[in-house]
Length: 375
Image 1 (cartoon, helix red, strand yellow):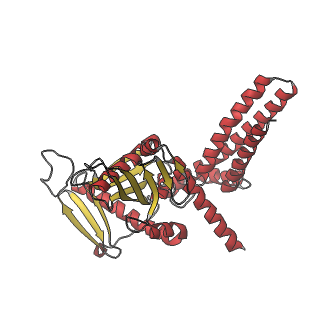
Image 2 (spheres, helix red, strand yellow; image 1 turned 90 degrees about the horizontal axis):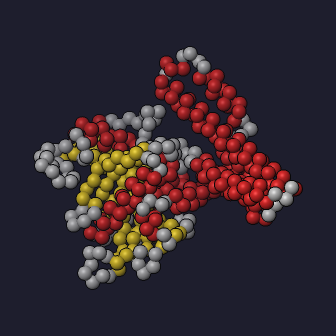
Image 3 (cartoon, rainbow, N blue to C red; image 1 turned 180 degrees about the vertical axis):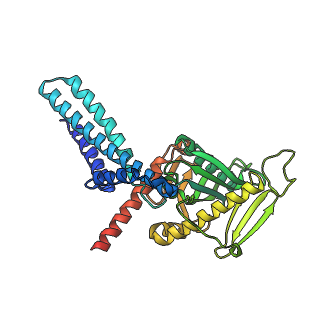
């Protein structure tokens, strides 16, 4: 077997080992039998919430077991084919099996990455907020570019994107925007994007064509599902209504339909301004509950808490990623050193490499912390 092919085989084995560890392969078949026995219980659906959670957990385990078995089976089959082809001096069989192993390596690597999304809320839908920072019109324009980037990314994933609120800039772009993004592991993927994003470019708003630096901040927090109960006393919130300032039209600014909710103990403010007042109130309350849930997650997860605490003001010294369009082309994540010169691809939503690098770094950090605690 060629050295390159052997390296491919070892990479697949490494991914397979991690997949087995994440699902606890030794006990997985037994746990699947337990799930199947519980589902046969005639009283299961007397508690719909519990039943739905049980069905989701069972399906996730079934998918994990099936993926593990497929990778293991395909690896064995293709290695056997290569050995057979080499014994019979059949270059065509060897070539086809090597090509299959390369595809399997990519598949296994993708599944390995998905397996890292095992945080408490990683599987949830997510809210995404973007706010322009230092830089005036430049930052408002940059915020709109970030909004487009994340919408493109979500659409490529097949996620549903809903605009919750938007506050336009005075001359261009947006001062702020909030989205709800729905799909498998939406929060797990996007949570690494929380932080300050820095843009360097020749300003299209500067008649002297000088280079400008702009900042915008991104907040990501999970949508609270029905299995998570968050109670907010009425005396802890203030609800204000105001006139929407969305796109033009004959009905704009004629009714106070937009809703702003302030959580008094924490100072958290959420808004919704895209639909009826009733819907806006529901959207804003859902967003507030999710923000409060995120705070609780932060308390229990030191690394996530450190990321949010370090985010600070949207300006110099607090950025997590730089997007440089002038004098050269480069996007670089300052936490992982992951970088690319394909700036247009990134701005068009090609963010998986950055998310994967941060996710792997977080998992490695947790593993080290656990090892130190065990020691």
